[in-house]
Image (cartoon, rainbow, N blue to C red; front, side, top):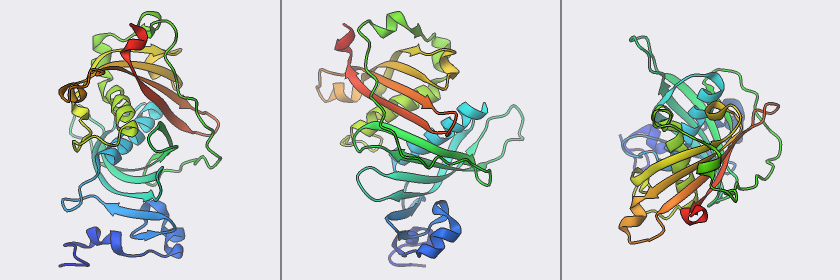
Length: 267
């Protein structure tokens, strides 16, 4: 059945205005349509989920896994609600599964919220990451500006802990997530549907943190080759993504902030 030019009701959600009362009753995650500067989108075969939203959904799962000691992996994004404006907040409903040795695993529905501090900068805050129905202490204070991490005067791959190949393989999912977020949030003009992110080749990773990989507060230096840029003929394809992970125990505020720089800074 066609509804406003769409072939199912979920796809039509984007053109149906929602009331303020409905938003107050159902909450932002269950918003349908648009109201108060918010718009809802359902992900399906008629309206595929944008790659950046998939990254933000994975970021929410990463926050949950880091704090809860779990290993949930994204299965699909069901819907998302986003605020209008250059820098947006995304309220994402997704399904995820935790791998198990037996067949007891089942899909869990998660809700996560990711906020962009500034368009074109890698400053992301994730205040909500929970299994739907779980209570959550939501941070409601003002965002405090985060200073972008910079490369130290010394070569970080010589003075900080250099991850072993086995560690890179074991933690590849979230390390690659950090790298892809660093590129995707700062370069919105990539022509490929995935920003050419599949062509990012990680060379090595250095970690500045007490407790190292599982530390809630740490800085990661990810040296990589951007083969997408290399194919375009750009000489500056050997680069470093510098990513600071910040978790505030008092508020539950989880932030990733970073930038990309040429590897020339350490040569």
